[in-house]
Length: 392
Image (cartoon, rainbow, N blue to C red; front, top):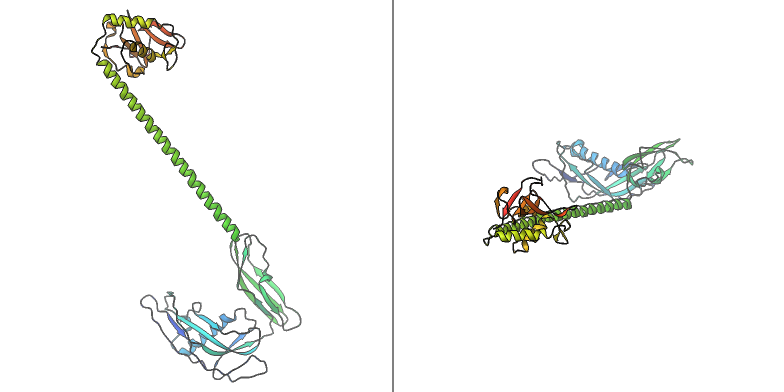
């Protein structure tokens, strides 16, 4: 008879998980021997088929069923078989007959709502007898209930067979079915069947197909390198963007400073109070005429080559009058007078062009690369917005 003692630990509210430990029972010494008999009236006896592919699971099921039967107030469906655990002393599962065993079982009971919680408890040990029987069916023992193989490698179901035997002298015939795809990662099912004239035995196991560890490491390293390169590229692009923004800001600041300088120079000229007498204006015009024939050079500011504003700046500088460098800035200098009142020594500006008045409606200016410094009518330039500036 199986004597049991029930211990309950209650977890409140959501679920009640009870861990029940089977008690210690006295046992007579009994040995695995086909000829010996033993008095088993004082202990529990569990029968396991030698060919059982999962003997511990079968033993756990039998122990739990017996416990539920003896408890009186507990149904088998209230026991969480998967969560319950079992362990035994060392047994030789290939030998038939009775063998003494120390069985330790933790019984997990849960509410009908199925809420799972982890429970732990020390359990007492039951002394029992395990009766290992042998049917005429062939014996089929697997090495493991699950195996792992590399992605893309070969698979042979027989590699996981540990033992196959038959009661007759002839070995059983093996057949196997599976859904293993060695080229796709995943977990697959394998079923092996041993068939002899005496019967049939089947066993199943899982096959996990996964990438080799070195491949996983290589992929991780490649992904890490790609991420680092992407981050480096992003940092370079950000640095280039910031450099462009800084260059643009610096150019804007320089342009503003140049504009301010030009405005200040224009203000200084327009505020010139020394005056340009008629004789000085004529002298300026006469000097400018001495430069006729000088070449036109873009950006030039000397007789070796002038552009329009470089020419007027140079001529006025010889008489102590400072003008800004560009024609646009020079257009803000002096006091504007009507074109009909233009006189020698006046500055004449157009849209982006500068010249010097020599009287009688004529000007001298650095005209273009083909003409160089030349004399022409102040009305012959048609780029618009002609303005006459009196410096003084």
